[in-house]
Image (tube, rainbow, N blue to C red; front, side, top):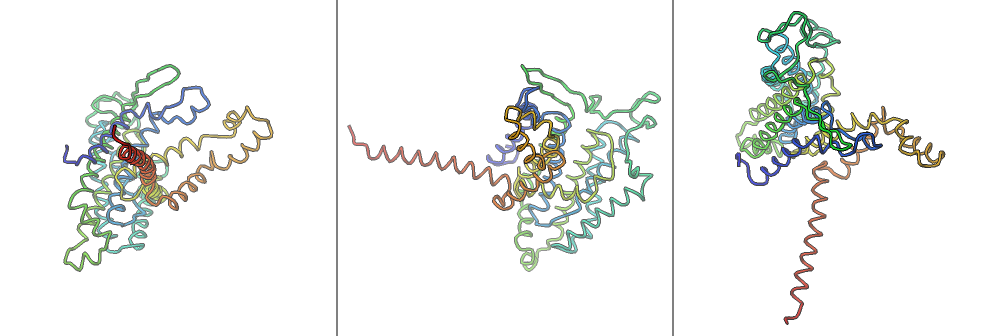
Length: 401
């Protein structure tokens, strides 16, 4: 179905169901409870899950299939964001043209960067992409300020009058999809639980599902097989008379278009752009997401993006006051001791927790979170297989009546 085999279609269906039910899945604890701190079912965070999932899926097409490690992918995210915000400021506040423009400009910039960077491989390629990203950041921060807004960035202002949007004088426009605002939400109260269904999240989720489907088709296509050949042994591939550069450049451009799409969606959800999106740390973040989830896997980058954004937005908000509330039932000495021990790993120290998790995954789960899930499934499978074998043995040794 949809050109996918049964296993891939089931995976796509699972991702679709998870995206649809995310407001329920990410809010497992009732409001007001001590564990409500771990709920992640609010619009801003859910949007980040799917948008950075798209960013990581695109990066995985390049890194996971070809083995080319780019340290400058945030440049395409930033270029896509700037293209989207200018489309909204000048032409229309409808998010579709802005997102399409972000994809186009992200792909065009990736074509330029890839044409130069792919003349080298290995660490030299990585350094070239990093150099392009930092140059782009510097241009956006201080040189091209009339276009980028410099340090303060760009946003929709009351002075903006998009051609295709009917705004009153002094009215600040809002991003919308044919009149439906991205910030509009429906709240559902079920007992002590509060679930939020946000229009912007579901629009971003639809784009994520389309992106995920396209990535599956790329992975299973002859084009994807050629990219795997590049990763396996590019030199041997060249010896056979096949020119690998058009394939790697195509993968680089597709990856850049994914990054541009993510940048456009970020603008659609929050109509402001700053040069910090192009900084090298943003490029490093998508590398961590992909490795943490599982390089070369289909769903791994999405899992990695979700885990990092969850820790960034949830673990970072836990402070000493919350810890004292959790351990208030304990004697004062033990309570203070536990708070002192846990304190370095939460709040501003959430990066330390992320570093430990990343280190453990790299050491014990080289295949990322996907490998961890496969191992757990394998353990359950072995248990069921052992039970089945035991049943068969009992049936075979039982005397006939």
